[in-house]
Length: 351
Image (cartoon, rainbow, N blue to C red):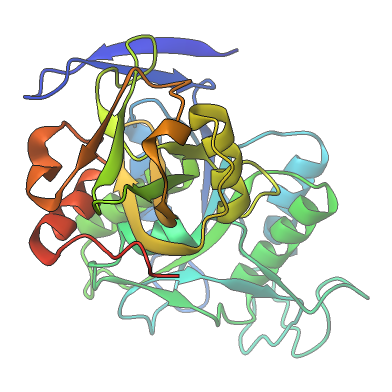
């Protein structure tokens, strides 16, 4: 059930943020007990921590999977029986890893070099007969790359091994894709504790959970010039979220649209303009409290003011470079404006 929360935020430049949520995200975290000659399994330890802690606004459930065929089947069977999650994060232990590894692929292949906890050791063959050779994770890699870009403790991996970890991952993703299920799935291999302590590993997994469950949208903004090389800024009306803040005119990229189509549609709706944007001039990833936003600003060239009709804004201003900070820009727009204030506004003739 949709609920609307109004959050008052007492920062210097704004008081009101409308946050729309679609209920509490549900996340299943799995791990494994010890196997082979290892004395413990860090994924079981981290699973135990998540059993005891609460993450604000996220419903966490945990499952310790057996290191055998039954364990590899369990989550796929849950999905097949109708269990619903917004995200599933499989945790496993990799004794040779020096970083936390986000596994990009799961492979339809056995190549076990040691026995699982049932004594099973399959040296070759397909996990599921006559299926695709590999599945790719369906998490938003753009968001993960942005959130973890400066964290040297994590990395993407394309080799999850061919043991029970890979088997579990492939079966889960295969069921997700067969059911056309929207649940996001990622396998994470954890290094030994002497490489990265358990507190740091737990903190990274918590960040990953937020990263995967937080909404992500792509938006487009128009870089519009007048004949004096000033750029257009529009003010949001009082009845909208972020009232009286200034922005590039534009809006959300809808399903099936590319950025150029989306901006053409938005400019028709907001400014009654028929424009064909020519080029993406700037991009900015921004982490709002309630969502991630990827803003793309497209060059729309020179447009005469009398062609513009404000439909969804209550004011507009044409700004020279030295006037850029005379209006209060939306947070996602601001880094681009700051860069242009230093380096100069791009040319309207960049096509």
